[in-house]
Length: 149
Ligand code: DQA
Image (cartoon, rainbow, N blue to C red; front, side, top):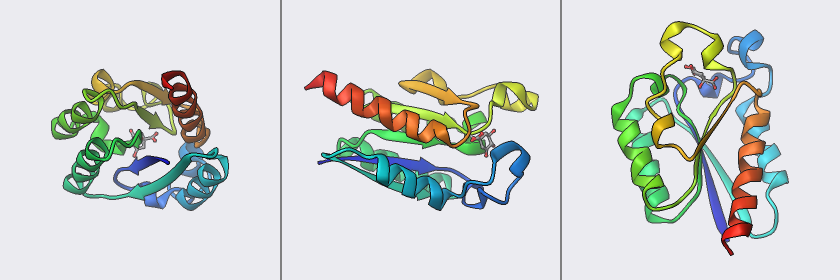
């Protein structure tokens, strides 16, 4: 069984009511349910959210230690957390895939959102496709696992 960790950073528990014009009305619970339904045999999805940088870093260490692929929405940490950059590299340097997901397209928003310190060490990035980005990331992780077999 491959466990995919879907990790979400600060303020994302407010999804559904936070800036619906930017992030839509889908809640994080809806995202979790959609991913659970979409996970094929042999895959399980565990979605978590925290506002705490240290907790997020601990979960990335756990992903590396348990060989769990990661879907990560680092939220605002994306733009300035070098500690998160280093923790993401700990995951990807093991060869595990880590997909950075953004619901909105940060490039089309405030200038401070144009920089991601995570992207250079992520396997890939999906941005601007709404919460569909999570499902697309899972689809690719499953496809890649099939190729690796
Ligand atoms: C976000 C984009 C970030 O700039 C922002 O701080 C978020 C959400 C997104 O999913 O579009 O909290 O990561």
